[in-house]
Length: 344
Image (cartoon, rainbow, N blue to C red; front, side, top):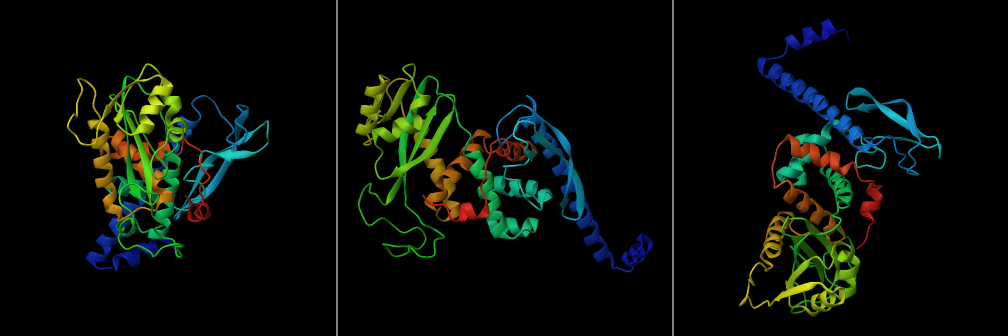
């Protein structure tokens, strides 16, 4: 159909239908124009020190022509690279959450929904992508963001653990117990193997580490493996009175202040654990919106909350761009099948 014929057909539409068509084109064109600069930012960040092969990490890579992809109804060209050492080709989005996506122009809207805190079904209604697809998009982004880490803490470091009920949410056949409804409760009093331990450490510059350590009480060996490289004798450690923290600090020869759970002595001069306890409280309040999180994905949600905390929950185009660019700077090979079949 020629363009003039299309125009004639549009003129036959009612005013309301013409307005809907106008809004459709404006939204579609805006999505394309907004998403393309993101790919430019990703390329600049990844190659600011030269072209590096993502397969063998050689710096002997060169540009190797362009390739075409179909983004919705539009065809766009993007840069391809080739490594002279291993001979493999790659692109700016190889081994990133955006690899293989057929709807790159929808990702900015999706990241906006993540920062807004919308549910998958609400996000699906807003951007026109099935909520199951959005679930995997979410976890591909988070699998990359969870690689963000700090090298070391400075000064006073507050460290404490918190616990979440072990969950197999989404699993069809649960072995050994009945399926819980809306989270449920542990069969045992206190801390048990039915709960998973999340360690949070935070210094006064708000550098934060959070990670799932395992089931049940935290032990000294888990502390060393998780956070040993980030602490030194120049730090001062503030924790509760659990014996694993005491023995760990003594072994590392780190100055250590403890605070009992009875809350009678909450502050010793500059030293306390109120910042990390506040972080726990905010984290658990934020997680309530998901009505339970599968334990195998809990590290992903910890990374999500940490990112939001770093940007101070600001919601603007800069933070949306930062989330998608940062997620593409870390290699991830998360696929639908690997995510679905993953275990804790």
